[in-house]
Length: 451
Image (tube, rainbow, N blue to C red; front, side, top):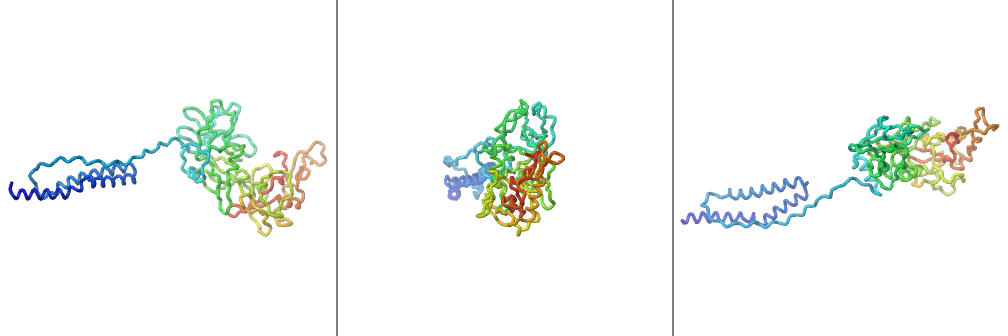
């Protein structure tokens, strides 16, 4: 072999030795470690792309080294290279399969509100559409509720049965899902296992089975709704009441407008508006409107100022004893047949009121100044005048129609002094700076057909 050939082989050997360290086990391990870090940081689908890229780069490096030889060389016998020991792969975490959503005994409000906008449970609500064709298959033979199609969940259609007869509030008697397997009463639609379920309903068709498993994220109420200014309404008393029809609610009169106060995703907090006797006031009650339009009227204890018996009176302001052990607030500008909770004092004059205590939530309670004010006198006289009942035969106090009025009908506050001494009328500052008037229940007019 000539000196030139030896020199050429020496140069090729040097170049191979310089390049070879980039491919030994340590360097290749670094490349693989970098690829693993990228796999952890990226989506699984992207990790496969990363591995592919690393593999291509490795092949490229091998071929690149071959291309770096300055000139062709005479083939030489090379030793077989043993496979580089593999680096222990990073363990892959297998995601735990998610089953269907389940109820929880306690669900925080932030989670409830998030699910109201992005439910896990698959329901899709719609404007109620009459579905009288379903009455014969879903309702008992002698039951005459109005049936509405109100939504879907997967291949199931959701129907609501509203009572068709009543004076003011018509309850939603049943929420029913119908799918290819049959019809089911959704007895416990709240995601909280602690919320009560609907009572047994014997008025449904025998083919409708009771379902206590299915529930809806969009019919689960947060426990507190902050309206700003320290005025927070709650739903805890509403949902824990033994008479609570879970999240079915009532239709209401159907003609009363509602004002939306706060959107909660699928739900909204509203005021259900009532007509009032005076042009200067309007009356309302707080309610949560469901996605299919029913109302969940909030219990008095869930609304600041709604529970007269829970007011903490300042020293010297305890009201005169009442015949009622527990009283709730009613709107002073409507009669006793309606369920309005407050009346708005749109012409509120601060100088005519004084602080007398606070609600259980810490909202200040005001009563008329000593000696009274015009609105207190107006409310008392109107409630007395509007009181009436049927008389016993031959009662000389009865009018030509056989009815008794005012004090003869049993109204208990015949003077402004007695009315003021009982703190029968009080006020709280509500959301958005509105002044809300409340009447303790014992000072409400006596109405024969509402007793």
